Amino acid sequence: MNTIQILILAAVQGVTEFLPVSSSGHLVIVESLMNTNVNIPDVNIFLHAGTLLSILVFYWNRIWKLVSEDSRVVGLLIVGTIPAVIAGLVIKRLFGHVLESPMIAGFMLPITGLMLLWIATREVGKEAYEGLTYKSALLIGLFQAIAILPGISRSGSTIVAGLIVGLKREAAATFSFLLAIPVIAGATVLEIKDMMGSSALQTDLSILLLGAFFAFVVGLVSLSWLIRWIEKGKLHYFAYWCIPLGVCIIGWQLAQTLLIDKV
Image (cartoon, rainbow, N blue to C red; front, side, top):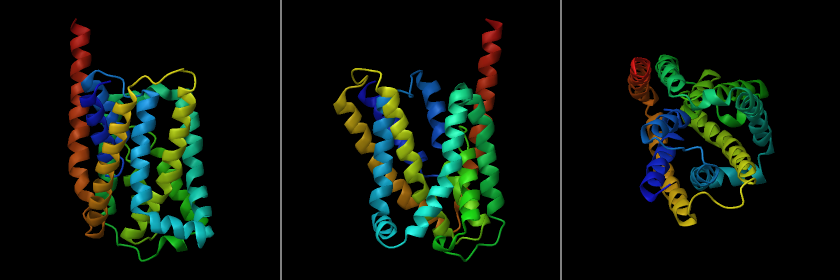
């Protein structure tokens, strides 16, 4: 993998990890368009590390509060993470090929868009995330588990779930991104495990570090931008990207299938 490719992937990872447009769906699409394999363990590790650092930097004061003062929220995060862990292990083991399908991403992206449009019609909640019940945390976790499918946005689905259970907009976003920490960290650990079978990195270390740094910077900007949009009630605007893109991807994949059949 060269410098241009890693920068493209880092930009896609940094933007789509936080904006409610599905990072997995966009990476699958980019992989197909670039005709390259983005599921290289060392690339995934460094790009995920970059976006994880974005969250840690952006929410460092809240994270410190969780560790030092509010252990109950840690319990809520654990409960919310369990469904994603189970879904990730089961689906990757049994249906791993589905997670790399642009067609699946094409069908799922409009679902993300419809979720965002639907939640815009509901009354905004008034609760802080510290007051969540374990039942509500589990519901948000189930929405996060569904987001393992390419095209279903993790941030979008968990923020929508947070709003469903009555959280304020900013509280729903904060809990969503705090919930992302164990998920991204867990995915990174799994990628490290996959890489352990190889004696050397598949990509030059300097390129990997550049990709991680670029993903961190882009992720930090994206996260800051998204929070402002959520506070202004503009979350549903991202539906106008997800739905048309999904339709275009489906058309593209069907056209490719027809061309292959003719050949």
